[in-house]
Amino acid sequence: MRWLIPAALVVAMIGIWQIVAGTEALADALGLQPTLVAPPSQIASALWTNRSLLAENAWVTLREVIPGFVVAVVIGFVLAVSLHLFESLRRAVQPLLIASQTIPVIVIAPILVAWFGYGIGPKVGIIALICFFPVAVNTLDGLRSVDPDAVAMMRTLDARPTQILRRVEIPTSLPHIFTGARIAVAIAVIGAVFGEWAGSDSGLGHMILQDNAQLATARMFAAVVVLSAMAIVLYAAVAAVERAVVRW
Amino acid sequence: MPSTRSGVAVRGINHHYGDLEAIRELSLEIHPGEILGLVGTSGCGKSTLIELIAGLLGEPSGGTISIGSAASPAERLALCAYMPQDDMLFPWYSAIENATLSLRNRGLSKATAHSQAAGLFGQVGLGGFEDARPGQLSGGMRQRVAFLRTLLSGKPVLLLDEPFASLDAITRAQMQVWLAATLDLRPATTVLVTHDVEEALYLSDRVVVLSGRPARVIATLDSPRPRAGDREATIADPAFVEMRTVTMRLLNADMAAVS
Image (tube, rainbow over all chains, first blue to last red; front, side):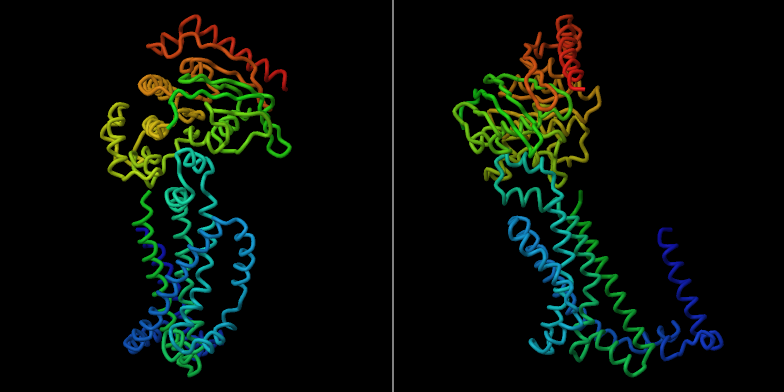
């Protein structure tokens, strides 16, 4: 029952899109050219006929997204804990953190490629650069949400600062950390696409760029569909890990 | 570990938070092994006083606090266990893991810590609930676990900050009887902060009445029949009722003088 409404919404949107883009008179009236907007039926057939090509490129992109995401979570977590433990460090580093998010990735990506080559390195770097931020910010919020009375109590129970961190502050922050990780994994695929645009010979982002240039619109949309599906599956996987870890 | 018969001496302390004066010229004595009730209106600085005694807030702005020969905040912190208002049980730990936090903080293994606590769980009516999650326990049971956590620290001074404030009246009455019995079993120098005059008089040997902010001592009263067997009979006793009336009048007069 709870799937009914979201499913109906998606079906309705696809239906309207099909009718508008697939009916020549309607498409002409709205100025939709088949090279710009492919009807869902064509995208579906592009998905099927190009299934092995899409799978190959999706595998390439997935192998960039997962290490990039893992690096981002580790960096975001370690950074947040360090900034939490050292107040003066936090004041010094926080502006730099925010500044790091104003770097236009599209600009820095080609530079990273020039430095590190066409391999997986620049892609992981770009994904980590985009994704560490929501993890770090949410983890910091979580660490700061700890009840001061809980810390006071732990101090009277002979806890050292590292024990307070391990037994109180990190468990309190876990739901926040996972919120950050869920945001990060959803935007990680965008990072991979930017990385591939800057320099790559395979991957879904590379495919999108190629198909766009060659006006293979249906196949380009098919690649976007696969990319979205990847993000949704990864998001669900992180949410499942969260449910297994945060059981309270 | 120093003697469990440590008393607390608070001498002429003042304390400010910025411009806010929380405590003024406050002196009191807590005798070794005694239960001292601290009553006062909400926000009068009772919690500040407790945190100062525990060494959690550093030195007071003026005056001295000592526990036996321990005078510095760090030394006092080593002698005090603090039970905050909320039961503050961590939901990621079981009941016994919560209760044994101090033992684990001191580096005892899980098995050793749990075996030390197991007997106590049975004694206070929590037998069989060792592995329950806090969310599975009733309000009264949660407070028992929270108090065991305080007791298992083995500290000579227990600082209880409105321990039963969140409980309903019936559970609260039961918990008062339970606490009286448990403290008879494991005596400790105890400060009981409460805004419930009846609770203070029933559980404490002496009751200190504090003024509204800045906190000063208005009066120190000897409880009529502290922790006598039957709670209902005790609180219906004419001497007890008289004492409750006197205490309430002191608090009311102080509030009237402020407003």
